[in-house]
Image (cartoon, rainbow, N blue to C red; front, side, top):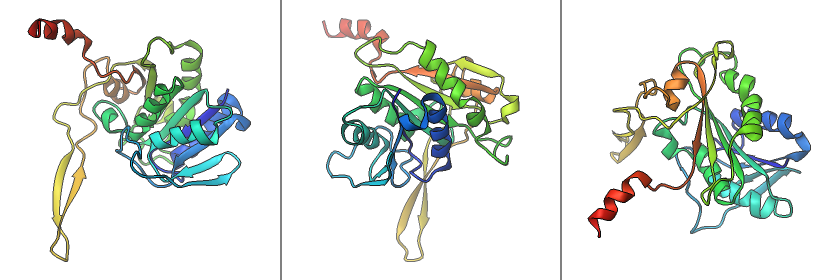
Length: 260
């Protein structure tokens, strides 16, 4: 199996090295290619560099950096770096921070696997939740390291994949606890953390110009049982099946009555 790995934390991020090791254990190092952003691209979601070209830099035989977004990196991998033998799986991460609940919508980590799914390629996003129980560990990615390979293999061997025009992809979040305290893996929905939103914090610079910082809300508010962040905060790995079809299918019949 040919695997393309990418992330949104950038080519030098420690989580990318962990993902590379996971991919090598799944498919062998000779079958793993890295195409990652040259600089951090957190929060860019599924954006692509539609209006400008991207510089691509090769560091070794199968390691490249792109001056663009995670979705750009997937496009570069499929149509340039691996154009003669395209990837069969795209892995994105391991993100430093959770991409559960509403964070999913902003995530460049998830954006990469959305792009993979748009090209009928299997995709899995992997993120490491942070909290007081794992932040100061010698390796704060402990759960990702301990359970990443197992989670990816289970998805590849047993999960549904190509079942519709909008392909499935998977969003995995590892819990904010030491690896020894992980209780297992749960299939989940995307949660909603009430009153947890991004906000603006203005600052006046020494030159009297006004700058706006975006800041996030607390990440340890609970979500509904059965959803991703709820599982994570109870020491479970969450695996959420997703697709890029944003239609609210359950609302269509009522809307049809409005317009008939």
